[in-house]
Amino acid sequence: MFALHEQLEYMTLEQYEKLPENVRVEIFEDIAYDMAGASSTHQRISMRLSTILNNYIMEKDGKCEVFHAPYDVKLSDDPLTIVQPDIMVICDPEKIDEKRCNGAPDFIIEIVSPGNPENDYVRKLYYYEKSGVREYWIVDPERKIVTVNDFAHGVLSVQHDFSETVKVNIYEDLEIDFKEVEAVVL
Image 1 (cartoon, one colour):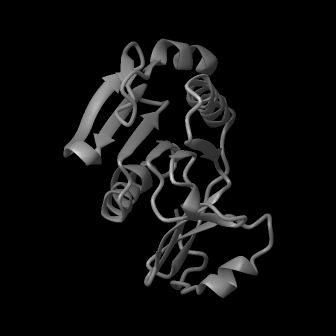
Image 2: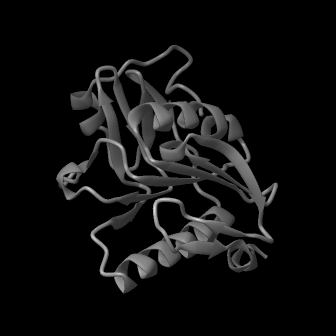
């Protein structure tokens, strides 16, 4: 993830909202950073996980909603911090307007891009925990590892490999079998 230009480019919400649709950036503390495009593997994993989450919520008649990138999440107004998580579950409808989620989603999944893993493992981990995300997963297709950060219960960086079933901690009875997820990658 690189700043838009060689020099840091500070951006206001008004400037961000005027960007062309095809320009994808995230803003951390008023600084805009380019986002990499998603690979086919990334898209397959994202679709599979989104489907599992959405089906679970629908079967339970749940109030939460699943959203996926590109969809803005404004974590902070001052300094401005806007991200586009790969997958998110939002349980408070008051946070959702026609433009974005205003505040922390309950659950976020980021799928690691090979060119910039530190963005998901370091930068976003910090901002998601700081902003009040309850649970944050980092899915690393290259290493075939899922890192679970259950902020709500003070549990950080529990790693599972793709041969395991991983519990979604914001729900009492949802587990995701990563063998099913790995199958879409092969």
